[in-house]
Length: 128
Image (cartoon, rainbow, N blue to C red; front, side):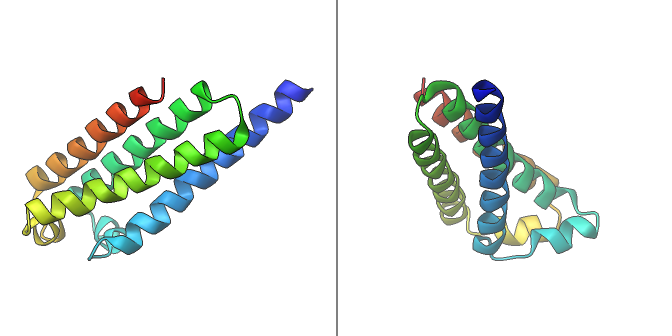
């Protein structure tokens, strides 16, 4: 039974961490991705999706490689900060990025999402 409880705790915690990441990410970006995605714009969906996938990979790696629950949470927190810093750095290097995402520049959205995914993959691998 302990293994099942461990599974539930990690599953629920991981999902809460992803939801928390999404909420923070949506507040940090200078435009409202949810509204733009509801309008059918692909670029912000690609950017947000890549960031969420990148963070989720970090959470998954943390579950796989950490024996203690507090360490799992700590590495998840580090992954959250890493993804937020990635967006901040990308927006600083490409000042037109927020406007491009808001105007549905799909290439910009794909690029931002890919960068976030690459950072997430590398960050997840660093935990092994």
